[in-house]
Image (cartoon, rainbow, N blue to C red; front, top):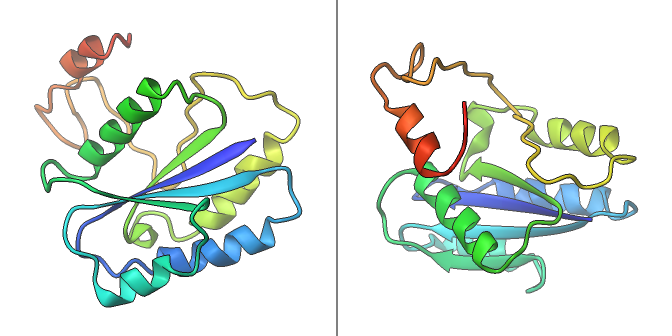
Length: 160
């Protein structure tokens, strides 16, 4: 089963790539095939470019995006790309260039999820949040008041 890490990078120090290399090595005995989709919205720093060299081509795909939106624009772009390619098998883990402020135990959470789902057939439409939990009443409250979430859901054909 495939597990894609989708990284939205602007100008962060993308140390997560170093930890992904360790995570991939630790999980090499499992049935999972890991890959990285790195979307960057500015030039890669020399440090980040060097970090990408630690992966083989089949493990990391590097894509340049225009600097619009935030990480959500990157994630939506990736989802639309995967739908167009009809790739809907496996799991996608969406993370920022520096995810540890929001999810200090990111790789522990991913490992626990994969272990708990190891006997589960890949089912379409599963969403498992990793990190902080936010709650919303479809108008953006309590975290982002007046954010029009319900219309976005409707445009995507989702229900709430």
